[in-house]
Image (cartoon, rainbow, N blue to C red):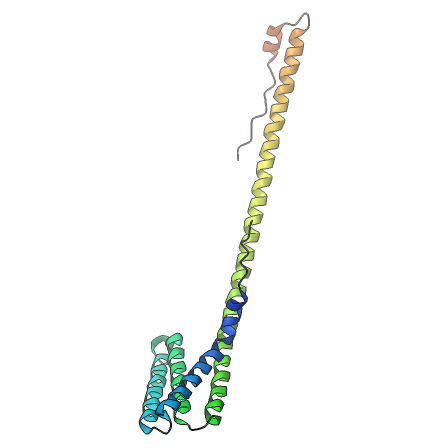
Length: 200
């Protein structure tokens, strides 16, 4: 059984681990760019971000409370959007760096906390799949070994029958070459039967 070995690039391995920090940092940077372009102490811009963040949070609440336990992916996306809008609004409205940095740190910690749950679940699913694959391969290898033993036994039976037939033919030829051989006597006495191949 040949297993395909796939070496994942270190970027592919590291990308999920840095994604929460990159996402919150991007929102903070965009908020500060917005701040530098006139959003600082702008009541209208602040109110807009409050309404958008509240709307996204409400959408997340409705998605989470939906029928049958709700849609977790949709609810998570809505809540993440709400948090991003709130962070961007504070970063755009505030006149200093202390409050935006504080909110950025809190948002990053929360994002890593939520991501850790999904990483654990993904790791559990991966381990369960690997265990199931290993058991399947072991069962398959056992069946292959049994079939190989059975085929080997059949070959040995056929080979022993061929050897017996060859020895009997050699004995008959040798006996026929001797003086005084009467084939009629041998026919009347009957030849020994060759072993029949076993059926499986």
